[in-house]
Image 1 (tube, rainbow, N blue to C red):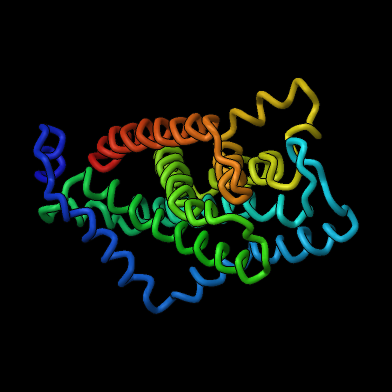
Image 2: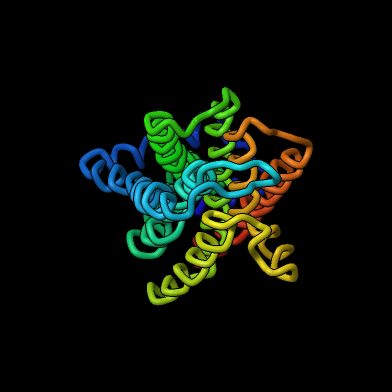
Length: 266
């Protein structure tokens, strides 16, 4: 584990080295691109079924004093969940398979790549996948007439930040997984996030005691930011959303790197 020991002693890796990990993943997935493509359609089905279908029954809703169609409210939240799903699924089960089953990272550490390169490269690939999902959804929003402001163009870089946040969270929590059965807890975390982070309901519909809990969740921060940008109503509170996601992403990325080292030495 020469590369690992060199990395832990403070040797800085080449700036382009993590892209080798991204390239490796792209080549590995080139024959299974349809798997990645299929994941991009899931939030679109929710948008068509709930945003347009149930939205026709719900009608207009009040969002911070502004009346708007339900489908316009739901769309940004689903875009945030698309970025989350694209990043999470690549940094949980897929990451664990390479870590424990294939021992891919052990082999990579015998090359000039370092532990930091592995973490940053895997994060880069997960962010790229999340960005693809978000971009596809943004195009669908535009085609369906759900974009009303030029601020919506900033939803894509915001979605990339969401993907980084959930990608780093995914790697960090995956380092605590012991067997495949531990991943049974993953839906117990993601489903409540998906349903209870104002994806489908305004914050005002929650009980007063539950609102601070909802606002503290990562997906709420991302959904609120995308919603403000999509509506063309950015404000200073969006700075708080960005700071929240950047800090959490940086902390989880650093913690994942520290956790991964001992796992690769075992």
